[in-house]
Amino acid sequence: MGLFEGKKGLVLGIANNFSIAWAITQKLHEQGAEMAFTHLPDGERPKNENKVRKLVDPIGAKFVMPCDVCDDAHIEAVMEKTAAEFGKIDFILHSIAFAPPADLTGPTYACSRKGFGLAMEISAYSLLAVSGAAKKAGILNEGASILTLSYFGGEEVIPGYNLMGICKAALECCVRYLASELGPSGTRVNAISAGPLRTVSSSGVGDFDKMQLVNAAMAPLRRNLDADEVGSMGMVMLSKLSSAITGEVVHVDCGF
Image 1 (tube, rainbow, N blue to C red):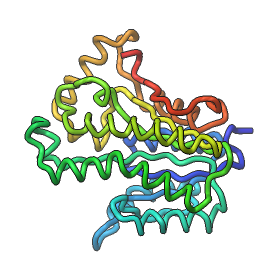
Image 2 (image 1 turned 45 degrees about the vertical axis):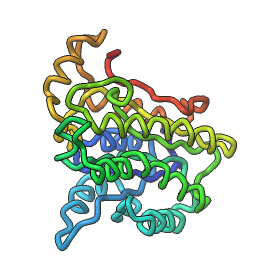
Image 3 (image 1 turned 135 degrees about the vertical axis):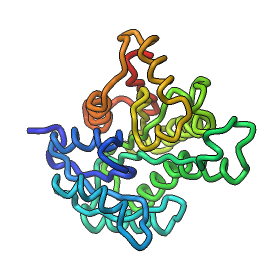
Image 4 (image 1 turned 60 degrees about the vertical axis):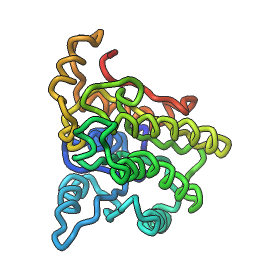
C-alpha cells in the first residue's frame, strides 16, 4: 500500500515534463495519490492546457483547470472545484514563479517598479493567496501539507539569479509565517530548495550553465542532482514521513 493511498491533493504550476512539480507528481502518483491540476490560462488556443493534460490525464487527473494567481476569482474557483470534487484534500504543491525577462536578466538595481511588483506577486504572494483561499474554503484535512519550491539564490547572492533571488527570499519568509499561522490547525508548510535543474523557469536565468558547473564543482557529492531525486524528497515532504517538519527550507542540492 502506497503512502498516499486515499490521499488527495492539488498541484499548481506544472509547465511541462521538465518541471520539478511534474517530478514530484510522478512520485505522488506512484504512492497512490489522487490529484487535480491547474495550468496557466490560455488565449484562443489551449496550448498550456494541452501540455499539462498530456502529462496528467494518463495518471487519472481528477480535473485540470486554468488559474491566474494574480486573480483572486481564479483562485477561489479552483478551491470551489476542489471542494466539489474532493471534499477535502491532504496536500497542495505550489510551483509558481515568474519575473519579466527584461527585469530578470539585468542587474537588480535596474529592475522596473512594475516588474518587481509582478515578480513578487506571482512568485511569493501567490503562496499566501493560495494557502489563504484553501484555509477559507475549509478544504484542508488535519495533517495537510503545503509545499513550495525555492532556490539557494534566495539565501545568498547567485550571479544571474538576480530579481528571482529576492522573490525566493520573500517566498521562504512566507513559508515560515504560514507555518506559524496554519500550524495550530495541523497544516504544515515547507519549501524545497533544489539545486539547479533545467526547467522552463531556469531557462530565463542568466548564466544558468555556469550555475550548474559551480554547483557540481563545489557540492560535497561533486555532482548535480537529477529530477528524480528532488521528486522523491517532494513526495516525502508532502507525506506523513515528515509529520513533525514545518517552516523549513529543505535543501536538495547534493550538499551545495
